[in-house]
Amino acid sequence: MDAISLSARSLHAVAELGFQAAQQGAHGAMAALGKVIPVEAYEFVAFDPATGRHRSLVSSGYARVDDDAAEEYARLDAYRRAMSQRKPVIMGSPGTERYFRRHLEPYGWRAGITTPLFLSGGRYTGLLHVSSRVDMPPEAPAVISAVSPALAHLTDVTRCVIDPLGLPPGFHAVAYERSGRRREVAGLPMSEVLAAEPAMAKLAREFIDSRELSRRGLWQDGTGQWRELRLHRAGVGFRGSIQGAIIAERPCTLPYDLTSREIEVLTRVAQGDSNPQIAAALVLSVRTVTTHLEHIFAKLGCDSRTRLTTKVLAEGLCRFEIP
Image 1 (cartoon, helix red, strand yellow):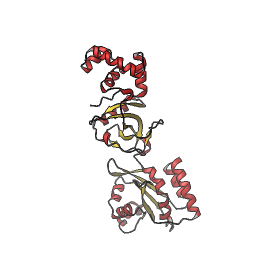
Image 2 (cartoon, helix red, strand yellow):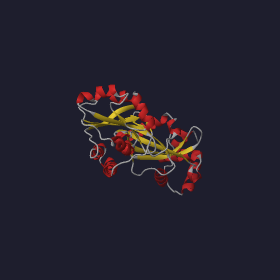
Image 3 (cartoon, helix red, strand yellow):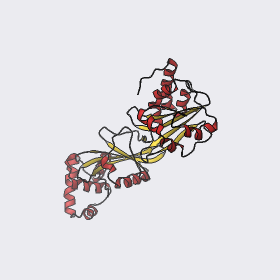
Image 4 (cartoon, helix red, strand yellow):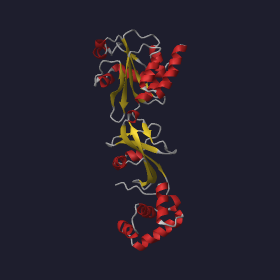
């Protein structure tokens, strides 16, 4: 982005806007911007990477917002130039005349600016349209450029409202809507392993319907690698408005020197199965199950099934059965 010069008044507005965007959202941010630019109407448009489409999120001052306006704007050459240069576009400039006449001029708007919104890391999240019945001051594009990274957070539909316990370092994650649609999780690397496993969407839906807040356990992927798996209830999409879940994973070795078979046995114990039931489910003899349990009790330092179950659930030692 080119270097820009702002007045002290504009710099104050930039700082205030960042605070208002975090505390009050779109309306608070635009109130701060309106102190230096005559913003009489605005619209935040989100880009959803899950669908590749734009949609209106928040607007104020416009008599109407056409449902197809966002996608129509995204097809303009002016939009493509704005994306490549990461600069605001003045409405009515070459390539925008028809759009201006259709969506702004009939309602009395004389001036307008549209800017693409990019997070400081470079990810595109959407658009901001601002309009006025008077001419915009010359510094308006520079001011909007300066505040656009802060405003980009307001159109970031990949944000999730995660369980406050959060996740330790080293996890990769995927967010799921109840419908099964996948989303990235802002701030966490995308898990290609989870994204490639179709059954994870079913696991996420079952977890959402369970009303649990979180769940953890072990999963063996298709290559035989064991992974620590954590599920957290989350709101996905704009301000967490869609019911969803986050599934996170990181590679691991089996704890306590447990074997794969012992993980299967202790998972059944935690589910409340008796030794005969475990033997039938795993196609083992009852004697073999008893031997496995003796080894498990010794490795985990437990002297009863109750204590074993408590430890297994607390430390996430159960195996996720994912078809």
